Length: 377
Image (spheres, rainbow, N blue to C red):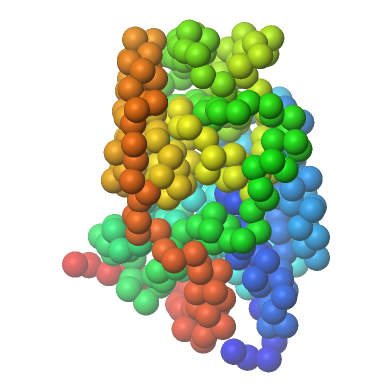
C-alpha cells in the first residue's frame, strides 16, 4: 500500500448494523495505514430506542461524528434525504477515500448515494442477500451503487454476479458479527442478568419488527402477537423493534406487558450482552434477522412470524407461522420440545475482520475503476 494514510468512513444507523461492523472498525483503528471515522445517525440518537450512541462511545473510537436524521414526521424517504445532506457535508470536511456501509437500511442507501455521486469508493457489507420486504429493494440498490462488495458467502457472491457486478470487486469475508459471537469477550450470563436486572431462571427472547409493506395490518399483528405472549406461560426478554414505519404500533402494544412479571422490556441491549442472553435462551420469537442469522449458530430454536424473513437463507429447522394468535399459540406449544442442531451455515469462520483488513491492505481495491462496469453473462 502507498505511504499515504487512507481515510475510511464507517456509517451506522442502528444497533444491528453496528454489531456487524464493530469488529471491522476496531481492527482498522489500530492500523497505521488507516484513519478511521464513524458517522453515527438514526436510531442511535433516539431516546425511545435506548440512545445506543452510548455503546459506540464505550468503544473509544478516535473520530466519531453524530448527526440526527429523523424529523418528527419521519417517513423513510425524508430520512434518506436528511441523511444524504448530513453525510455529504461531513464528507466534504474529511474527504474520505472509502465509505463503508452495511446491509439494507435507508442510512446505508444514503451512504452509497453520497459516495458514488462524489467519486468516493463505496464498500458494501453483506450485499447479495435476500431479505423480503422493502429492505431487499434497498439492499440491491446499494449493491448497484457500490464499488466494492464484502459478502458473507458464495450464494451472495453469485447473486451480485447475476446483477452484473464484476468478479474483481467481490470479496468473501463471512459475516462480521460471527467474529463477536464466538469471541472470548462475551460476558457471562450471571453478569448480564445482574446488569439488566433479569431474575428469570429460563426465558425466551422477543424481537418483532414492523414490515413496512404491511403497514395497514401492523397494528393488528402487534396486538395479536402480544396477546399470544400473554397467554403463554414463558418468561420473556423483550427488545424494542427498529424504528421503521409502524414501530409505534408495536411499542404501544408492548405497554400491556409492562405490569406483567413474566416480561422484562428493553429499548435496546448491548450487543455482546444480547448475544450472551440469546445463547442461553430457550428460544427466540418474532421476525428479527437474529433468529435467522445468529440463533441457528448457537443452536437456539426459533419461531419466525410472518413474511419479514421470508427469503433469508433458512437451513435451521425454524418454526414458521403466520400472524394469527392461533398460529403463534401452536408454534409456542411446539417450541419447548423443539431441538435444533447448531447450524454450520456458511457465514464464515469468525475472522471477517482479518480478511477485511487484508483486502484493504492490498492494492487491488484501491485500483478498482470508480466508473462502474456492468458485466454481462
